[in-house]
Length: 69
Image 1 (spheres, rainbow, N blue to C red):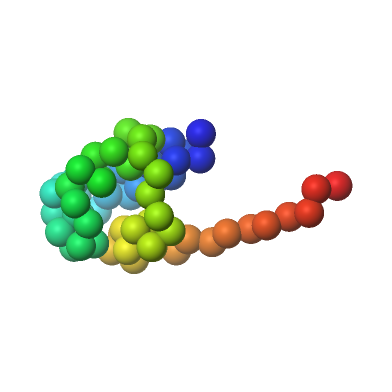
Image 2 (cartoon, rainbow, N blue to C red):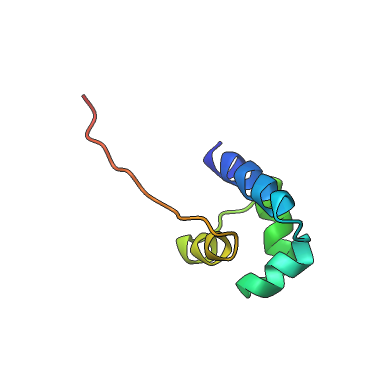
């Protein structure tokens, strides 16, 4: 579920910026297939890949770890 949510966020931001999937892949130095899969909620992208994509899109990745109540 998390990868699917991340994919939707990335796709929406990419479209806001009028960037194609191949161009985003080039700018982030990842494969076009990685972008395709991520936006469809498939695969298991590394944090490094997500950070590269987020940087190109002017976004930031944060991780919150909470103790269960």
